[in-house]
Amino acid sequence: MLEVQEREGKVIFSVRVQPRASKDEIAGEMGGALKVRLRAPAVEDRANEALVEFLAQLLKTPRSAVRILGGERSRTKRLEIRGVTQQQILLLVVQDA
Image (cartoon, rainbow, N blue to C red; front, side, top):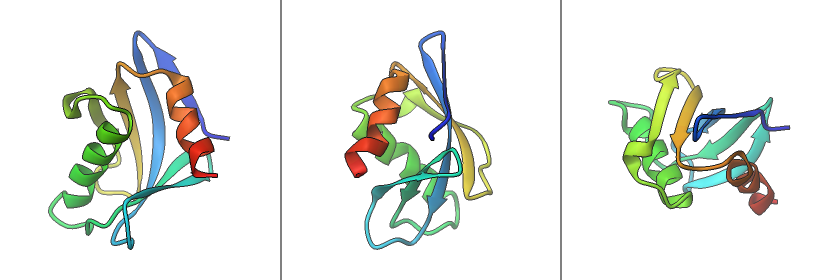
């Protein structure tokens, strides 16, 4: 089950990134984290930028509302998104199924 914390108009959750995938997509849940496949390679912060852009588009929120709290150099990252609900994040996994 995806672990999402909601407080003060922000949600915080973990994301497991698979860079250099065939397409950008949500690939379900993995170990309590949202699994995201991205076409971008994991060099020069391109995968991080692609992750922020992809989630902002998916959740119809500005890029500035999406922030990586930790794990910039890791496949598992901790994210904070302003202006969305816990339910919206949980629905990302359901829509994938």
